[in-house]
Image (cartoon, rainbow, N blue to C red):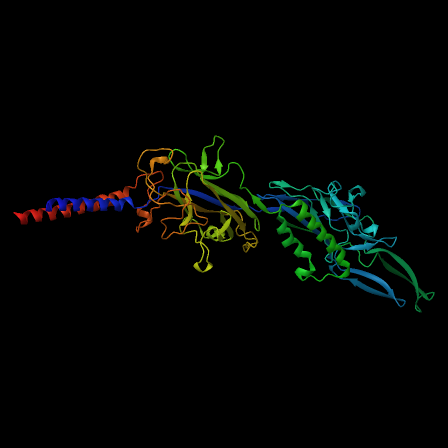
Length: 578
């Protein structure tokens, strides 16, 4: 009788040891979805053909071709300003009469006034150098023409429009005003998005020296002045005649052209370009003569922002193929429809989010569908795992990308794409394990992600963009745990032949990690196995493993030790009896 009790106790101990293995929860599978973020390459430049003229004569046209090239990977909006400068390089001597006396005067070297003009024979003001704008591609609003016809540029009347909505405006150069600003600048906007690897039409074709220009000393006049020492009491005097206040002989001509490009998004245009001229935001003090110019430029920029540029929000949530994490119907294996596939549908990268032309201030949206098409029931978890092989600039960029993650219509994370949050923030730390709930047969949910690249990305010391054309990556890991083991045959009432022991239901909120054994009662019988008190590294089989090798191995060892212990105990009892 005592022997029997001992053997029964041993079997009970062995059964208890076996139960240890039975209650160990393992990750049935793990799946890695990679995310790739690359900022846009940004490279635009002004291209011109120009040879500085020597011995430039009035009426002569010199070649001056100007256009803009976009070698960026995103569309841009182009703004060009130009003014002309004249600088006298020689000292000019003049003989003039003052109070009947012949006096020598000098015009010293130095800069002439900005947007230099002269007065013609009719008393009208004209430009000393005339810009030959491209008559096929330069337009102007009627109310932005110069009030003095002699100061207008060579824009043909058929290119004068009444409205910015006129079809003639689109993809043309628009002159903001024929009245130059306080610095003598003419401002032009290309009224279209300049696409990657393309160039604008020519803005101008040449510069002509005004044919009415004359030398500083345009001639001379002869006078007779009293001179007691002269034979007849008068002396002949030759006096220089000055063409105007300033002549242009012996001067150096410079045409300054500056180009500014900006990503073709509405917010970027309003934030950067408008502030350049807005006296209420930039501290620029505009005089009354400048207010019409400011009003014109503001109207043009608002039109570009509202009707030409992109909104700056790019939603690929419903692009084909739809990114889907699913459990197959037959064997419950977790599979993933990737972001990129080749023509023959062979996976090239296990991508979820892949944004490769991210521009500052822009927002990018994507979505991951999750559905359980199998007849097994799983608990789903996820975590964000930053790469360890990134360099300093790549890690910095990750922190420059803001991210909101929504699950079941509620924001569960608001931070950067690394997924990390300080504990004081009160939000989920997505670098830790985040439970997404129980997925029974046919349950479908979605994870929605919204990314925004910092609009204030810094510049390098040489003026280039510090984070331009930088590729960085972060991984999302998904893990599933079958919530109860199966035993028995499949039938309609109990798919998969699994024997339920506890009733649970799908939670309305993400499931807490601690103390989870049941979630409610909706008539669906399920059992949830708690995580063991062992490191994750020792409990994760490789993807596709259905058999918990490590727990069973531990169970076997414990069972053998118990059996050995009870064997020794039984042997001792027998010895004592003898």
